[in-house]
Image 1: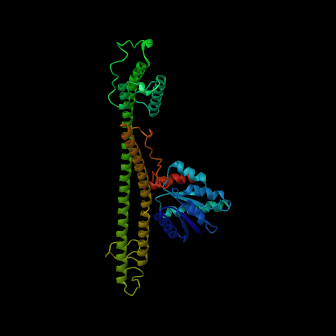
Image 2: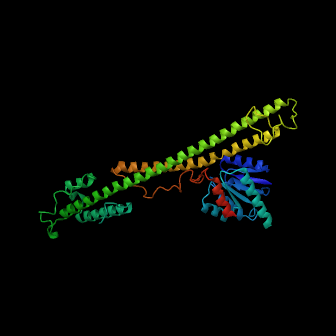
Image 3: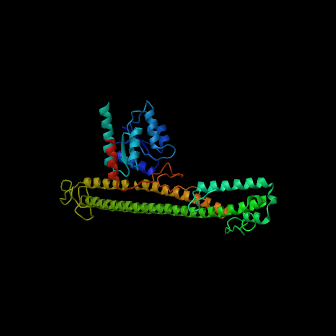
Length: 125
Length: 278
């Protein structure tokens, strides 16, 4: 399964990529903001992990753009962010995020959320 | 013209000042030219914020109480004396407003100071955690070395154990009975991954610092504006009377930082997200 990891912090990208590799996913592309994420998003990407606060285009706008395109509307998206106010989380859900991970996270939490998203999508299909 | 000089808002001050100036302009128009003014009256208006001194009460003892006896110049002098008193009151209100503004900026700076102290504290905790992890990793490297020395041919002794140590419970201190090298390597790998996880603090603290930087830049801009006004008029006019707003940074990092980013309570915050996403 190919992942797209979008985060403006190179440190966080490395940590997410490292965590993904640790839990068994090794095919990963990276982007530094939402706009770059949309640029590298191609049909081979099967799962998107994105931060919220980013320059140029934030994660929420990128999620809305992905959901508005018929080609990518059903792509599983996991948001990994420091934002943890209830209203923010609700807003992310309304924008189309499939699940939500609060930073700082552990690889175990990341694994659980990815599997949860995939199971739900498999059940819905 | 009415002004609550005890605590006028900026809008009230501006409205009153505007009204006063319009009234002066109307009176001057009715007189013809400014050159008709007595030099004393003109000086009094231009001098600005000296002690309000309405002068020798031009309306008393001079027959000026009766409107029909006043000349246009006398009416102007009377009006200017009244206006000057009101302006002095307005300026006093401005001084009070300046004080409120200064207190608000101090509060804002104190909040930022607290934020930076919290960032410093989180940095220290994360650094300590990483050092602990690295020390444990070094101990595991020593343990691997010990195991290798115990089995120089590369074959683990005692069926994968050294000195019969249980690989699941073997100690990590160098010099302790060596564990199964494979188990030790796994533990070393876990430790190094945990060290990497601790590095998440960098993203979180950089967001807090970015927000603090924006707030400080905003305060700097406000102070520069205040200084400019002070230099021009000798008084401070606030550029905005809103309270400091922690949650809405407007500077260079506004899009990229979360002012409430924290390394604390990750489990409870994750639980709230889980609750919403089911």
